[in-house]
Amino acid sequence: MPNKSDYSRQPMTESEMIHFHSDTVGLGDLFTKLEPVVKIYAREHTRKPPDVSATLNAEGHRTADGALWTPRSVRFLLALMVNDSMISRAAIRVSR
Image: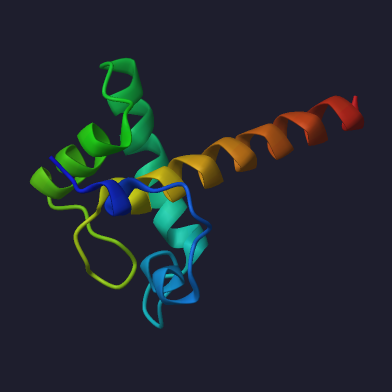
């Protein structure tokens, strides 16, 4: 079970940002690769950050800097994906 600080709701620190954008993998590339994977997990009822991080790691998916996923980093990943999805839906509504 992850420790409480690993899954905290504190804002992302500057040192954690490397997990989402590195010299070799950008945020867009990471999203393009992981968004369909995470959606499959959600359809299979794997939605909580501890479960998603364990599944991503078991399947060999890594963060942008090659680290293992933690529940905390997955919480940020899921939040970014939800925000991106909400912005995309709002843009579609505005364009109609």
